[in-house]
Structure formats: structure tokens, C-alpha cells
Length: 540
Ligand code: ADP
Image 1 (cartoon, rainbow, N blue to C red):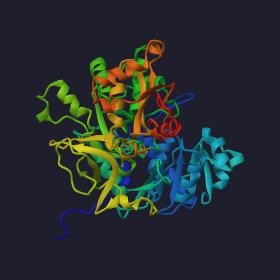
Image 2: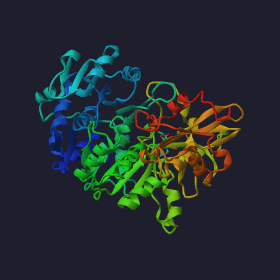
Image 3: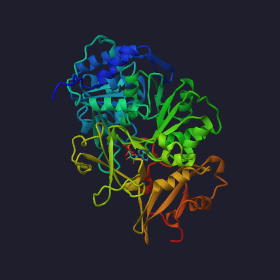
Image 4: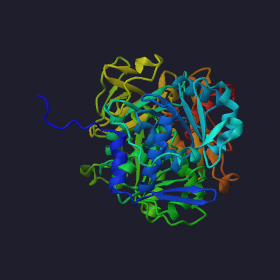
């Protein structure tokens, strides 16, 4: 049967028009070196049209990729909308990658224009000669940058009409965005988002049982706009007319918490390492966090101690979310279902520290080594597979890791259990599991336990080769500054002995100044593994 409902094409344009039509007075706020930049969705809309017109003039056609290389700020938000709204593809390049990876990504995407924050001019100058397809460089600033032959963003916009008519997005399946994964193995791989996937993903973020983002919210994702579209917040916020708060490059814990305080932020989101830094700061300084109604933490496993810290100390709910660049990224969220609320606090916590139940429209299953679906008993492990309207169907323009997409499912590389309530629990990433004498040890479980120790600031556990057992766990620990002198390695091991079987206990503990971080701020276990590959075990 045909023709039951109108065939409205879901698109980023729908989001933009709604923001302008119904929320023109709501604010977009960006911290800058010289104060705070504030304007409204109404002002924003006119500039998006000017930018769209400029993009057309620069020769951008539907399907062309346009790169951004920038912090979270209002100009970046304008690019987020103008590029897809003329049918082109917003490619957010990760500024923290090594120059050769940046060059690979931009050349692979065949980007036509590179928009960059002026502070990155020296970096851009360094890799610009190697870019094969970029025809225009635009500095997101008042002035051009002559030595790069980069135009000024503001000058580019100034001459454009504010009533440019956006072309119709005829097909919701057109590409709108492109993000590359950070490429722990092989080359970085691109994930293309469609207008439809961005729209549906935005709706999911706004569902009450997800993050319930709404018009009243003042949203501040501490996730970079070059990392999985800042977890979808810029689009979802515009859809509901929420106030948006951007930190620019002011990303230190004090900057973040001050912005939350000053701008009365209600919803924020970021990876655990960000919150570890903030918790350390809150030990010594006071800030007003009373407007915060929700902290979403994801990207790595969240320790119970972190959830309790904000809950008990500040009465702010922390919700854990799981996702990947390939899943837009919202995959699952660990809200506690009402039938579980009669459980003890401790039992409820065991659900909140899991990665949660899938977002609506996302389906899950876990397969064992023989490709059989594992039971949802909370114990049997398998590799998590997902499918849904905002899950990638393939990687962009490559056959690398094509095997991850099979029978309409995407294999995540995460080893999980699923319980009878449908809660996913990540045991580990396949590549981080520690293979000890034919058995698997979960580095995540050990890390979560270590991070709950009151004297530990950061911790990561990695596999190190072992003559007898193939691999054994090594714990790398950063003690909190107040305990550097008084904290011993034996104390660390003793703490774990109370919680894990003896063969799980790391063979050694290394005290380090800092755990290296990935380009998106997670503990960089790949780097740690390389650093310690020749580690001599005690007694060897
Ligand atoms: P990267 O490879 O750069 O980390 P992503 O940001 O796409 O790229 O990371 C996705 C991976 O992060 C997931 O496959 C999973 O291993 C991990 N992850 C994401 N959220 C969580 C979470 N809440 N708990 C544990 N691991 C998580």
C-alpha cells in the first residue's frame, strides 16, 4: 500500500528551519579569549544562509566534502548546518591526530575546502602542501591569513545575502556528515552519516528515557565537535531549541566547570577522563553546579565511584552511555528501568555501571566464537553486534574491515554480556582483553576497580607478554597528588585481591605521572602496550 503518510524527507534543514522559526531568541554561547560571544538562533540562521551562499560561490556541489578543523564554537556550528543544508558533506577532522593521519584523512575524503580555527594556522601550514584536493583554505576569523592564502571567514560571509534560498534536500538518505574513527588498527576509516540518520539520532537524544534533551536545557557537550559530532548534541539541541554552550579551546577542568557554573548549564556530556580531572578540582574548590540535571558519561567504562561522587556530593544524576563513531554515536544508555527501582542501591548501581539498554531503533545481539548468538544471562560473553537507522552500513570508500558489516549487522569489536533485562555490559574491547594461560582477563573490570580507590587519580591495565602465561596484566597507576609519598604498590594489589580471583591480580604495578590519552581523551592503551612491551616482570 502506498501513500498513507506524507513523504517528508528527514533532514538537517528541517532542524535548522525549526530552530529559526520557533526558537529564534534562544542563545548560542561561546567562550572566547576576549570574553563571551553570544547570539541567538535567529542571528545564527542568517549567518548559516550567508555561509551556504558562500559555499555555493566557492563551487561546492551536492555530495562534495568540506572539512572543518576547529574547536567547539559558534562558527563551527554554522558549518555544521550550512554544509549539509546545501547538500554537501560536513567532514569534521580530528585536530589531535598526527599530521600524517590528518593528511591521509583529508586526501581520502577528497575535501574541497578546509575551514580552520586561526590558532591552527601553523599546523595547517605544515601539512597544507600535501593536501591533494583542497582548493580553498578559510580561516575562521576576522582576518585572512596571507601566507596560507586563506580567506577570512568573516569577510567571506560579509558579502553574502542573508536571504539565500537553500536547495531542497530531495532525499533523506543523502550524505550529510563524515567522521573518521581514530584508527587503532589500519588506516582511519570514514563513517558517512545521512540526513535521515542525523535527524533520527537527534530525536533519540531528546527522548525522555535517553537524555531527555529539551527546550529548557542549556547543553554543553564537553565532547569535541570533531569526535562523533559532539555526540550529536549540536543537532539535537537545535531541534528542540536548547541553549548551546561552547568552550572553544578552554578545555581544562577549571575552564569547563566555570563555564558550567557561569552559564547555568543543565546537561553536559564527556568521556570519564574529563570527569576525573573535574573531580580532582572539586576536592579543593567550590563551584555552583546546582543547575546541572544530568551528566552523560561514555566513551569508556564509568566507575561506580564517579557516579556516586556526583550523586551523593551534588545530587546530580550521572548516566552512562555506550556508543561508537560507527553508531552516530548513541548505542545504549544505562538508565535504570522502573521495575528495577525496588532493588537495593547497590544492586541498582550494578545496572548503572553497565552500558545499558539499546536506544530505541537500535537492535543488539552478541555472538560467540562459533558465530552463535549467546544467551542473555548476564554471564556468557560474545562480540556485540548492532543494527539500526543510525548505524553505519559500511566504511566510506574502502574495503578495509569490510567483514565488520555482515548480514545487516555491524560487529563492534566489544566483548560483552547481555542480561535478562537487556542490559549490555562491556567486558573489554577484543584488542584489550588479556590472554593469560588460555583464559581471558578483563582490563576494564580491573581499571574500574582501581579508579574506585580513593588514592588513585588515573589507572589503566594492559597486557604485557609473559613467558609462561602468554600475557599478564600490568597496572599503570597515577596516585592522587596528596598520596604520592604514602601510597605503595602492595596497597594497590591488596585492594584488588579483595575483589578478584588470584589469577586476575596484576603481576606488577607501575606508578606513572600520567596515563597517555588518545586524540579523543580516552586512556591510550595501545600506546601503553607499546611502552611496556619489553617490561621485565619482577623476579624475571
Ligand atoms: P575510538 O576507537 O577512538 O575510541 P570511538 O569513540 O568510536 O572511537 O570508540 C568506540 C569504543 O569506545 C567502543 O567500541 C567501546 O569499546 C568504547 N566505549 C564507548 N562507550 C563506552 C562505555 N560506556 N563503556 C565502555 N566502553 C565504551
